[in-house]
Length: 85
Image: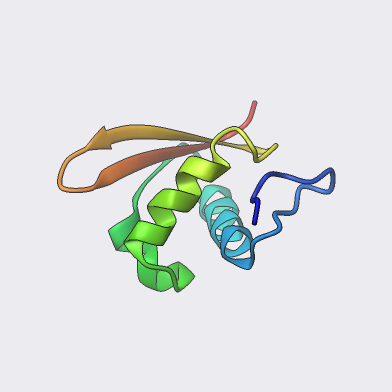
């Protein structure tokens, strides 16, 4: 099943929708970029860190209003999430 963005900005996977919704909410609460590790947000989105990592890769470049970038690796991948300009 694909998680590519549809014209409405929705993703076909419920897991992807849940993760995107979480990331958008977190960005709204912050004034800058968001840096996350899957293992630290797993409980918040009810997904395993492995599922989060796989979804983040799939979501890169496919969400119109947020930018997802693999940022660094120190004991787990850190992702930078930012609002699109």
